[in-house]
Length: 186
Image 1: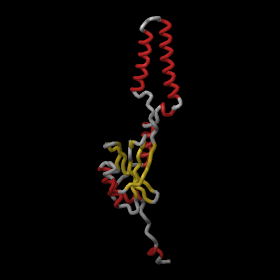
Image 2: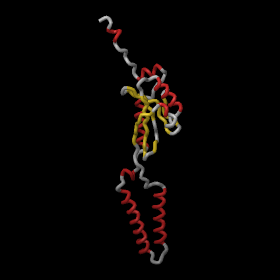
Image 3: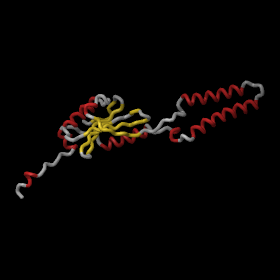
Image 4: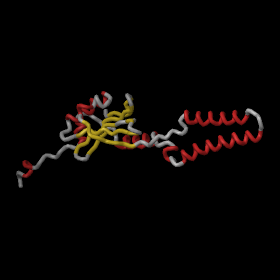
């Protein structure tokens, strides 16, 4: 029919096309995936967290070693102060290891994502460069939603990023750590 083109719905622009019209070049999703993997490896669980069953064995083994060294030293030198000195030395070594965090049990990290309102960006600690790009992109993207991803380790947020999502299509607007911008859409 000759008039079909007049009533056909206009093709909706993709998220990347909308951002390109605004001069915004998002961070590649490959860069984000590589960054996420590197951060999970960087904040991996400690040896003692992965092998929690060994921790009591190691601590009990150190006490047994302390008792054995004290008993052995007592047998070697009757009436000598060496058994006490060796036992005290062993206890100091164990205390230093515990104090230095050798037996620290640190859980692994994981990524969590959540939707955030555009008005909360400053309150959430999003750096101004990334927040400015996010406000512009959000304003120009009808039906879009901002998603903040956070690397969580024992309830502490380590390394957030910000995505813009619309109809299943996502682009990364920025990655930061503390006050340092790792990557920002330009």
